[in-house]
Length: 477
Image (cartoon, rainbow, N blue to C red; front, top):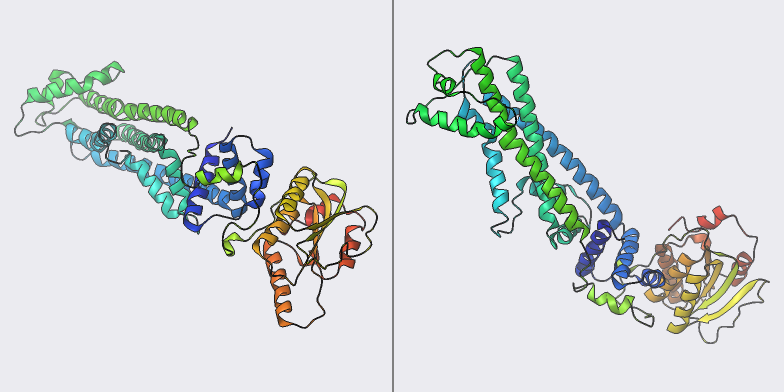
């Protein structure tokens, strides 16, 4: 079952290829055709293989780590902000606390943000209404570094935004941060009210005492259902700042204030957090691959055709450099010692010498059909050793290097023979150097290259090395 990271990798790769052109993926496509079933699975498997090869999976892992660290920083900041709000609302105890102003300072911004979040479902303004969640996403994106780092959050948003998962995920982060802030606020209130003596009153120039009696009773109704105390009408009228209140009245006002913070602040945020988590998980489980998107449509003809396409699909360049990918140990056939010629000139003698016992001659591989047949054969029966003989007098094109990289990815050990020319032509010397450079860039070590068929055949039929040594031939890749 594909996970979210699989879709994330596929979208990142789609965006990258849309910006920079298609990647060299002949080996990955062949691997996909041999293992995947449906077309969406083929797209995801190709993306997984290319993401591992290009390091996209590591960039995503680093982005996730940075996102977690950013979220941790925001949690600490929210906790401190809640504590600071409670401390500012109560003061140092030297002056009576205006109870309604204190409640406004504690819950005003939280209630305003909660209303904006609810309103975002009714007004399509292009925002999720979860500003703390959007701040988290913005900070995480700013902290990302690397050539493809900007594509990671963009792909993240694209995948989650297609079925409304992003809104609920950002909502969960926002509600969670507000819940942390309110928890810090509540703990600070409890600590300060337990350690200091605070007086509470109300002050007004325009409103009457009846107004404060009604407001106190209305706001205290829900907290009273949870067991919090509500000041009586007599206590409210006496809390006008002109009379000295008994200790029991201070306790009533403290309970009423804490009850309002819990009922109108913490509980709605916890409920919103639970709703966002449930909806986010449900929508995330329904994430699928939109095959109609540009970049995915073009892959159908390459991943699901009845015949194999060979050759160069795009201009040569550094971004199309083929590389040997890590093979699975233990898959090679123990008695498979193969010799193949790759696009040799027609007058090249073949085989180059009398072959040692046990070596299987595959002949000269020159056409697309021969390449396809060979790669399909090695995909099913990976050889223990493979010796490829090339013509260094020809220019090393991308298709040939890609074929050699695919062969080396399938075989446990691969060596290449580039017969040295006795001529002193500068062009031939330059081509031979180009061969070595391109093969080195593909992942071939210097000890895997020979300038004569004799040493190459001696290696091919030589004593078998251990499994550790066989795997070491790919360690450089």
